[in-house]
Length: 300
Length: 333
Image (tube, rainbow over all chains, first blue to last red; front, side, top):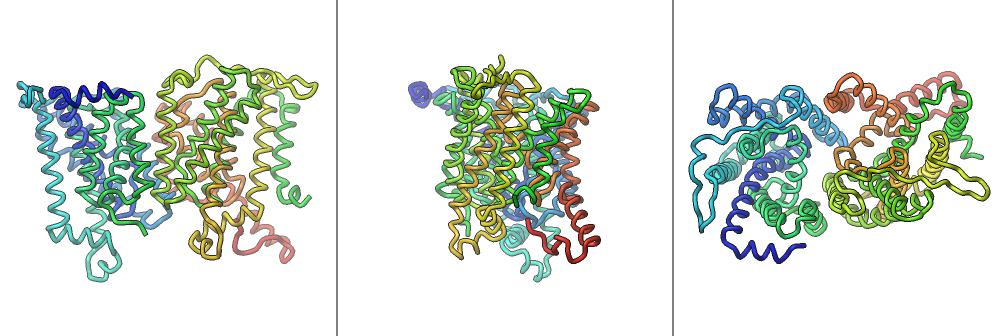
């Protein structure tokens, strides 16, 4: 435990701002990964262990687009769509067969998918990481806030993440599609009797979740690079965020992502030895005290 | 006597394993069989939770790692004998299992599974960070001393591969027999009842949580034995053993072998290790093929190998022996 250093950082404006900005960036990536996971789990009831791999595929697609077309902004459109398509295919071929099945088979199928996707990127792209350059626009002098430099790209990530969060919240609560999705999460049988094609909703939701993850991968690629281990490393944290925030709640996922981002960023200073374990400790506390998370619905 | 009749296959297996080296021309398979037996024990211990009680524990690797590291550390740092080090591993693992089981059984289904995973990753982090004893990311390299086991007048040097083989066979088979006794006992049948409908079990007065915690501890103890034997077998312990990606291996084994029979994980372990060795020797993309096989099994071929043959055997018995056969429609598992 290194409380003196932690307090020193919290009181020093430059250290505080630096750590805070990196915390927010981590939180944005986590939010994008976990919101899709939460959506899928809430509506389809599937704990998708391959979700981190969708995130990773987003990063790799960004690499491919950038190296072929030299245009980062093209990847902003193509990478999420590509991952969304992948999600659609996966849902139609694989996920459909395990709806309502015991959780063991859900875990095993998505775990098998994780193995396959992780190795496919090794097959196509090789075993080492692929780096993506931060676009030139962001390579100018950083913004100075309270005396500390914040890379422009971080600001971009923050804006993008907030836009997605707002957009997601808006779609889910204010549009007819969103309300249909909510209905599918609560009672798909009745919804089907009302004439809605619930299977289509399921495909749509899965593709949406995959797209969110793909967008997260795209956004994170200049900072985290595209590595084969990206998928399996982010999936556990995504589940942690989903559990802490509450399944199906955009606000909860956002708050939980920020919480995890802060604990990662300041935890490195305060308790460097156990920083990795702190997030697991957090989720254990939540699961023991309040399993449905911050904004989730209490379990039966 | 009844036990020997209904579990003759287990006794026969034990006899086969013990006598096999005497008749086999080459002893090159000893190492493979040792590894398979250790993994089989790991799988059987998880099966107690998975197939008999219906608890999907994704964190079982924690017990394996605790057993492995405890045995290794005690043998390196203190003058414990092998048996005492293994026993310490079981004790530590059992205590952790008690703690873990108490909290995890408050939840159900996905949340239960995920909490077990979180517990196991805490162990993973502890192993990585407690470098002084565990060697951090590198693990316990440098070997694990194997002091000879002194039993009355015999001195058994376990560092010899053949002697270690017999030691493993004995320990693993005794564990199998103990596990079989547990699963065939009234206690085991209560577990099956809990698996089928925990709510109804609670309703008729069974303290479901108590049974779940007890079987958690038992599974933890046997998992630790497997871990300790593994540490001795590969002469080291590594943090990967506690990582959740490896923790899915025994579930894969159980799925391949069959979830409705005690021998499922044993056969599954053999098939799994064979697959690993076979695929790795042809390509470096092992996870790709394992993943595809896993997906295929889940979608098309959920019946395990042992289950398949048991069903065939029962059908033949019914056909050949008619009313005298032991086959009843409606399986008991």
